[in-house]
Length: 220
Length: 243
Ligand SMILES: Nc1ncnc2c1ncn2[C@@H]1O[C@H](COP(=O)(O)OP(=O)(O)OP(=O)(O)O)[C@@H](O)[C@H]1O
Ligand SMILES: [Mg+2]
Image (cartoon, rainbow over all chains, first blue to last red; front, side, top):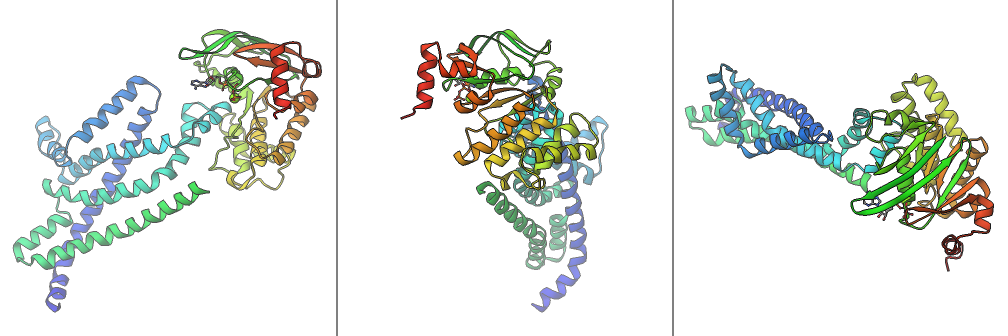
């Protein structure tokens, strides 16, 4: 135990640097995937068949390619076309694009959960498409989408470790580097797991609360 | 004010309106009665372009209603609609529901819109409930908020689609009372309803719709008291003597 604590004190500062990158990748990809996901879903519900089809195809293609391959593509292939990105930027963009498909599906389910009578009520007072979305549909859909959004955040936090495959020294990769140079696998990976839990457990508890609140509202 | 001419509407192969022609004058209160599935809601929804149709025309003050044209927004802003299931915005308070249209569609200043909104809520008997959420209000109160929301747009006409059908019986009277007061104030109203007593007391005219056509129309008291058509007679008998 004492050895564990001594080693922990030594490894933690390095691992915390990894935590910083994990948080950066997660938050960056979260923002990007949210914005892109909103674009996909707004195209999808635009009522313009060509835009809806384009959105459906974009989502299918994104969902059909493993995240790791998307990361490789952005980091290793795009430079051949003159677009060289830092590893961190490539990770954020890759995960952001990959997750935009999940975000879009989540947003779409939330929008479709809104009663059609709401849209008719909005139209009946003269609202156009954009105003109906902004004032009536999206605010209500947001509440429905919040718990699954939290779940996407948790998945994204864990999937941010895939950035290690394109040399981003986030938490998992830092752990691997320390472990392979010190051979203290147990200590290092226990710390890595605990650090992930420190970040994910609060999110998991928050999602549970949001789900219960939404359930109560539905029942009312 | 509203001129409907030769309106035909089908859902797929199912013909719902088979040539409706009717006129509603300014200040008139017209009730539409008829059996379930006869096309009453569909007719109402064509008037503000919530449905499109296959032949015929609707004009409001001479302006054609074109469901797929941008101009439909202007039409809808001037035509109020009250739904059977209220359709209040659940994420907004009573007052916010009422001022939503004036502020965001008509771009009125918030302070003026809210002052008018409060007055409208008072007019439908809901002074003091401005901050209540729809879920905190009874069905009858929600429907009165919905009427205030329609009135807030200062419409030329209000369309009511069975406004009391989803209400507990003891709450029906409050809503009908508000509608009667509106009629007395000269509001033009087109009301789909099964409340025959209301139609007799408040309406100027009644249209009886069956199978997508207007089978009979006439002055309310005369037509409800002594219908000419057998189908009207049979329908009224069924509504007035359900057992
Ligand atoms: N969106 C729709 N798609 C397909 N059929 C529809 C649709 N809306 C209405 N209908 C059909 O059109 C016919 C007329 O419907 P409508 O709602 O206008 O009747 P209604 O007279 O209002 O009846 P109720 O008294 O039950 O409200 C019905 O047979 C109905 O099933
Ligand atoms: Mg109906």
